Structure formats: structure tokens, C-alpha cells
Image (cartoon, rainbow, N blue to C red; front, side, top):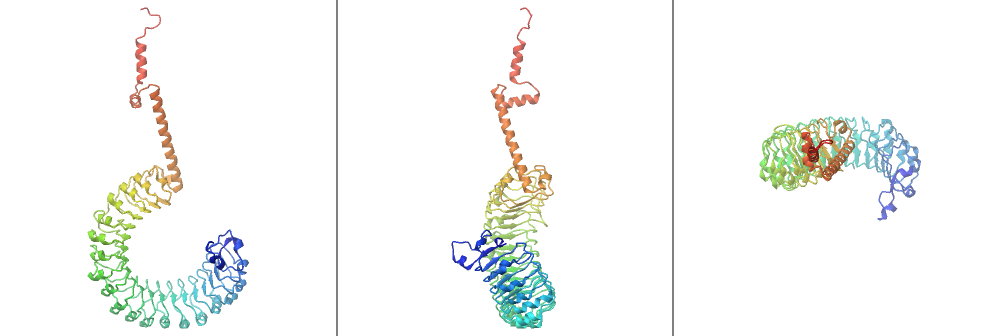
Length: 567
């Protein structure tokens, strides 16, 4: 069994010439001096006894198996500090688990644990991290909150919790608590006395308000309350002066408290799917912002002061009502990702070229009358989304697309393209090409030069054949051809996948080469035997006439006297 595991010992790590993770073929390296073991993803149904004999083991990974119970022998792992058992089939926890006196991090997520077996966790007094995600919890055992005084991380997401025990106030060292995807309709106010809290995650609950007491959490750095029912935010939130990440996505907000202008350390803010209609004025004072999400907020324009956000790297303005490309964006020299999808933009300004660091641009579903060639000045661009699922559709892609030499992904689906530019073959870094739902009748042969291409999406076009050398794209893993009138190769071959298509193309290429060789041999034979030049021979055959040699022979026969005739 031991050869199934990858092992690392401190002695091995000290020897730089040896690999850090030993291979499965090195069972002789497994000794009682083993400190780390990875037995994840091995389809284990129990913990092997020889693992439990490794008395100096400090870190043990057994996640993603089918383990149904923890054997009593677990008590022998007195030195284990990290134990990962998530994604198994554990229902109960043996009492001996509570004897792991050195355990600091325990993950039991994704197991159908019985509530009655959880109190044993209260014996793990050294525990600093406890993860119980997706365990079907409806309440947190009070005894855990009473006894575990050193917890720094408590993971309870994706359960059925609607409250926390009041004993949670004992967790004075708690720094991170994860409660997303539960049933909280009231913010657990007891959290507001845990002054060391740095991260609170309450995404995807039913919260209607955040208490004013949250202002007491002066150490709070990240607050996630997306996908709730919050119509307002407390003024006191401005007192959380260390707040750097604030996710308010998908709530009922129409404005932000003016006092929040004081949050000068914010680097990431999510306001998407709220009813703002305008960019909050105070937002333009958060000059430290690097990531800003304003998708589907009813915006029609940006404030002039938006240009102050010079540190922005990621800006999402998709699904709004913006009809002109905001010139303020062109001053954001550090911008790397810009999403303007599903707006009403009809033209790009020439000053867009100032976005010299832009790597990702989303313009899907706007009102461009033709492909915006201003894009070609964005030489750093790596991903371009310009499919037109609504609005005007493009009939062609300019040959100058080749100027985007760093482009890795091109999405031009849902247009009226009948052909692709041959210059695509010069874009050597292209990895993904999405041409679905167009009117393509053929692909340029130059596409076979895209040696890094991984995905070629072509469904719902008018293609009947593929380029002969498409199988030369050795990295191509995804090729979709549904809803095309394919003949070469036929659809019955296409539906079998890439291997069948490659086989067909190779065999077809061999047949063509053989046909060419036979034709060349026939041509040479005809010429050597004096049947005239090949072109003349073909003309004669088409008209049903004999060859020049045959005609010459007939003339000679006509002038020769027949046998028995006297001169």
C-alpha cells in the first residue's frame, strides 16, 4: 500500500539534489522519520494501518477518497499538526480523534457527518483551523465554541445554519469565519465583539441589515455580503479603517453612506447588480482601488472624477446603458481588464491606444456598425470578446487583426462572418478561437499554422469541409462542428471526435498524394510512348478522338495497296 503515496521527510528536504515530493516508486523511503504524507485521490476506503504507525508524521492528506470511518489507531499520530479528510464518506468521528494533542488544522468538509459525533472536536484544544464546509450542519455544537479557544479560522460555509451559538464570543483569537451559502436572515451580532476578525464571509444568505456594531471590528480587512437583501449599509462601516475588500454584489442598494469615503485602503469593491443608476460620488475618492465591479447597475455614464482611479487594474461596466465609450477610461493607464459587454457603445475613441497594459477587453453585444479597428492599437491585448449576440453583426474581420500578436483568445461568435482573414495564421500565440453561430463556408488554410491553438469552436456555420492539414495542430483538444453541413469529413466521422477526424484527414491526404503520383506516372508514360503532350491527349479523349499517333497510322494504311490488287 505504501507505494501509493508521495512522501516528504525533513531529511530529504535538506538535500537540495533530491526531489521535494518522492515518487510512488520509492516505498523504501517510507520510514518512521516520515513527516509528510499525501494519500489523496487514491480511492481508499480506510486509513491503512502502516500510515497510523508513522509516529512522527506531522501532515497527512487523505482528501478525495472513500474513507467511511476513522480507526481508533488514529490516536498514535501524536505529532500530527495537519489532517485533511475532506470529501470522504465519514459519518461519525471516533473518540480517539480527540487525543491528537498537537493537531492545529483539521478539514472534515464534504462528509455526511452526524451531529452527535461532533462534540469530540471540543477535545482538540490546540486547533487553530477547523473546516466543516458542506457537512449538513443545522447548528454549531455549543461545546466546540466553549472549548476551542485558539481557533483562528472557522469554516462553516454551505450548510443550513441560521444562527451561531452565543458562545461564539469565546473565540477571541478568531481571524477568519466563513458562513456563505447558509440561511442567515440576521447578521450574527456576536461576531462584532471578536475584535481580531479580519475576514467575514456571509455571501449568499438572506441578510436584510448589518448592525452598527460592525464598526467595532477595527481589524476587519475583508467583508463579503454578496447575494443578500441589503437595502442600506451602516454608517459605522466607515470605522473599519483597514477594510481592503468589500463585496456588496447583488443586493438592494441605491446609494452608499457618505461616511464610507474614509475607507482609504479599499482595493477591491463589488457593487454589481444593485440599483445605483449613478456612480457613487465617494467611490471616486477611493484612489487605492484596483478592482471595481459595476455590472448591471443602471449606469449611463461615468463621473468626470472617475479618472482619479489611476490604480484600477480591473473594471467591469457590462450590462449597463452606456452609449459612448467613456473617455475617462483612457486615462487609466494601469488598466488590464475592461468589460463593456452588453452596452450601447457604437465607436471607440482613438485615445483607447493609451491603455498600454490592457490584456482583456470585452465588447460583446454593443452597437458597432463594423469591426472597431481602434482595437488594433492595443498591442498588449491577450483576450478579445466581440461576439454580437445582440445589436449589429459584423460581416468581416479585417486582415489587420494580425497586429494583435499577443492575442491568445478571440471570441467572434454570433456574427454574420462568411470567411476569416488569412492573416489569422500569423497570430502565433492564439489558443482559443470561437467562431460559433456565423455563416462561415470555409476556413483559411493558414489556420493550420496556429500551432498553439487549443480550442476551435465552429458549431452552427455553413462549413462543408476542413483544411487538409488541420490535424497538424497537435495542441488542438476541442473542435466543435455541430450544425454544419459537413461532407469532408462527413458528419458521421465528425461526431466521433478529434481522433476520428485526424485519421480521416491523414488518410484523405495520403489518397490525394497517391492520386498525384499516379497521374504524374501516367503523364510521363504517355509522353515517352509518343502519344503527344499530356494536355493534347486529354483534349482528344474529351472529344472522343484518337491520339495523334493513331491518326498517323491510319494515314499510312490508307495509302498502302491491298493484297491481290494489281498496280
